[in-house]
Image (cartoon, one colour):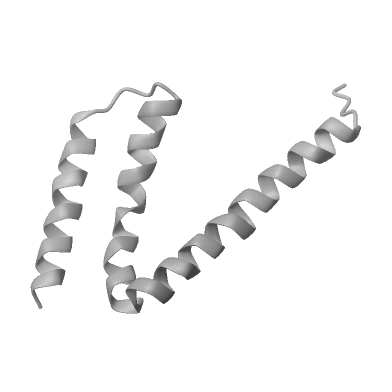
Length: 85
C-alpha cells in the first residue's frame, strides 16, 4: 500500500511545478506576443516541439533520433514558407 506524505516539501514542489508553467511561461509568451505581434508569434509557436527536443537532449540526456532531424527540417521549412507570404 503506497503512502504519500503530504508535508511541506511535497506542497512546495507542487506549487513550484504549478506556478512555473502556469504563470511564468504564459507571462513570457504574452510579453513576446506583445513585443513581436501576434503574426510573428504564431509563426514561432511552431518551434515549441523543437525546443522540447533540444531541452530533453540537454537536460534529460535523451539521444536525438533521425526523426528529430526530419521534424526540424519540416518545422524550419514551414517557418520559411510562412514568412515569405
